[in-house]
Amino acid sequence: MGITELTPDYRGLIDLKDRHVLVLGGGLGIGRQTCLAAANVGARVSVVDRDPERAAAVADEIDGLALTGDATDRADVERLVAEAVARFGPLHGLADIVGISDNGPLGEVTDELWQRGLDLNLRHVLLALQVGAKAMTEGGSMVFVGSVSGLRSAPHHAVYGAAKAGLVNLVSTASLELGPDIRVNVVAPGQTATPRVAERHPEPDYYDRAAGQVPLGRVGRTSDIASAILFFLTDLSAWITGQTLVVDGGAGRKFAYNL
Ligand SMILES: NC(=O)c1ccc[n+]([C@@H]2O[C@H](COP(=O)([O-])OP(=O)(O)OC[C@H]3O[C@@H](n4cnc5c(N)ncnc54)[C@H](O)[C@@H]3O)[C@@H](O)[C@H]2O)c1
Image 1 (cartoon, rainbow, N blue to C red):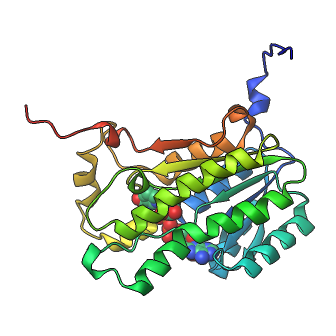
Image 2 (image 1 turned 90 degrees about the vertical axis):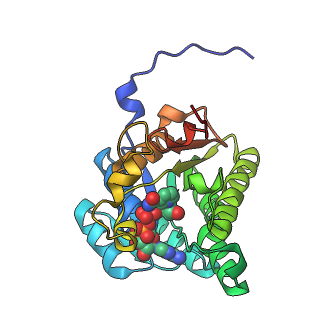
Image 3 (image 1 turned 90 degrees about the horizontal axis):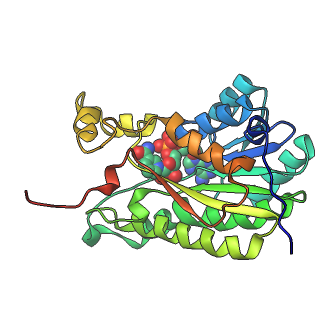
């Protein structure tokens, strides 16, 4: 098979004009910023959140469609995607940002915490892959937000880390089954300043202390993560699937070494 050499117009490759992007967990933090980024380059955006006010506020900002539902519930995901397609047509992009870290010591992980961790960090990935793929009748790209916790280990991250590690493998497997028309990738953030983190760590010097561990000198902004998600949603990444991109300011490059 001959391969035609191409010198693209890169301005067009970062464009999502006339594309429909659905963002699960789009109401706050990284999800909200992903909605703004996709809209900024021309996408029609369906903003899904289980909190109706958050979804409506973001949709208002970008003239998008606000949808309320639970990404961990199969019937809800089917309804949400059907409503989005009815409004904006077939899906071309899907970003699944849903996830939460309920950290605690291994010995205190109850059956309930285990199940909740898997539901909120892994189950919706399967649902999004299955339901999203059916709605991508013109092909498309899906991006899932993992975490550095799914690639390396930290004390008290047992449930979250195991679920996010599962996410990486699930998406990798999906890449083998959904090609050639649908690409799937993972963005794995390091520590990022989101409203949820700020709520959990109100100490004024929290981010400064965290920044000391980061070669690029600061914790992540939600826009840092949204930029990586946007890369995977656009045709700039047309020949990339099944990958995990760590976005952590270089923090994970270090190993313990006693000089
Ligand atoms: N903030 C960090 O430092 C960090 C680091 C690594 C990974 N992550 C990952 O990034 C993602 C986003 O983090 P964030 O801090 O922006 O989250 P967040 O909690 O600020 O926002 C998540 C949004 O998703 C919505 N949501 C939660 N569960 C839902 C469900 N079942 N159905 C529909 N909507 C739901 C929430 O209402 C909220 O609006 C998560 O997957 C998280 O694990 C965050």
